[in-house]
Length: 236
Ligand SMILES: NC(=O)c1ccc[n+]([C@@H]2O[C@H](COP(=O)([O-])OP(=O)(O)OC[C@H]3O[C@@H](n4cnc5c(N)ncnc54)[C@H](OP(=O)(O)O)[C@@H]3O)[C@@H](O)[C@H]2O)c1
Image (cartoon, rainbow, N blue to C red; front, side, top):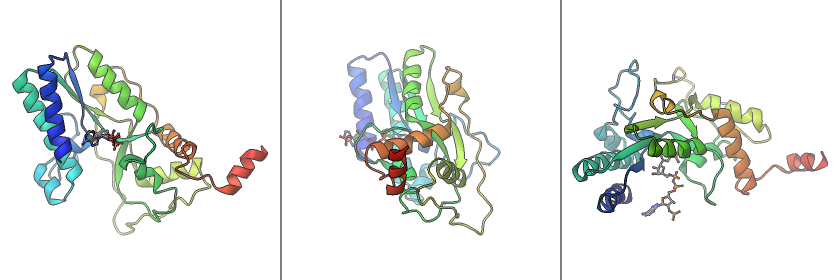
């Protein structure tokens, strides 16, 4: 909470003092979609905000912190006359720059190491890290860009994620069973990426995001390549 909220306010105030032309703030889809009272027919777009009470009651401190941070960013920017544009990415995948595993990479890694024995009955949208970077540049460089920009390529059920992973990487113990065998399979909710698409972005397909994530984990030595696969690659 503290670095997210105070850090954001500090940056917007520093930007106002330095009279920077435009601030692009990396928010999150977590500030947009966490609202249990929204009807499933509603298309989730940039006008939607997460319900702070719901985030608090469900102890979802990441979404709570990001929502307060983004709301404060808008307030400070308005008061100080800062030109603020916000990017709201979903789960970010793709090659890692940093040596450590962050939360979004763990989301995939757990399906390859055997630590997740089942997959959840849940849906999630995904985006390639390079597209998130492109989105930041586009909203920075396009003079008419304003407000918030939801940034994602595609939404998948976890069952689809493990299927794609298993097709590319059958050598890992990827779960084949859902943890929830009672309820019907969760359906995608309606989420739009039209606003950022209108700025000209062409998203990397989610299958490629997943493939590149795993390859990067292998190259960085975070995910060992099973011995028999390594041997067969060497022989070929
Ligand atoms: N990853 C996603 O799926 C995703 C999705 C939507 C939005 N976002 C947003 O994208 C941004 C980056 O996320 P990420 O996944 O790249 O996170 P990450 O890998 O955990 O990186 C966080 C970065 O923030 C820095 N940091 C953390 N606490 C700090 C503090 N108190 N003061 C200064 N710097 C601090 C860290 O510095 P050190 O390297 O020095 O530790 C690190 O560089 C965040 O705002 C996140 O909310 C991420």
